[in-house]
Length: 205
Image (cartoon, rainbow, N blue to C red; front, side, top):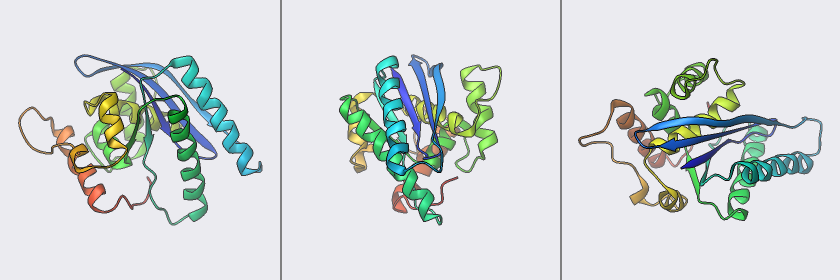
């Protein structure tokens, strides 16, 4: 399964593509960041992101698109721009007839580091190790996009589960107990359940 991860942001939008194979193995396909100037009109900045997303979808032909679920923040301007870019990514997936998955930041952090409160440096380092890279992906937005893609690969969901996850139904919540779960998987499952119970309102970090 090939997954495109999108870390939405107006100034920097992280994009990361990974290939998932049997045995929880993931490999890097491509990574990058879409940058737009703060002094440019918002609709033109969104157009740049949209056009780049379309290019990536055409070039890499992913099986699913994973986008970070946007949380409320104290900085209203920042969360508004982030939400707009997330909407552009969701629309791009729909236009390409691809399934969409939304993952919370704490869910992603727990999936790749085992800690739902990991900082950006920890996420970058674990992404480097998981993908066998010589250096940490930079900037952090690029690492976050790859982490999103890895998270979706490891949650055991194919295209069908991504479609169901759009609606946030109870059956999409991962099990947090039982045999066969690693410590990181249990932490991730508990983090996602906690975020759902809280109404997915928390600072982005």
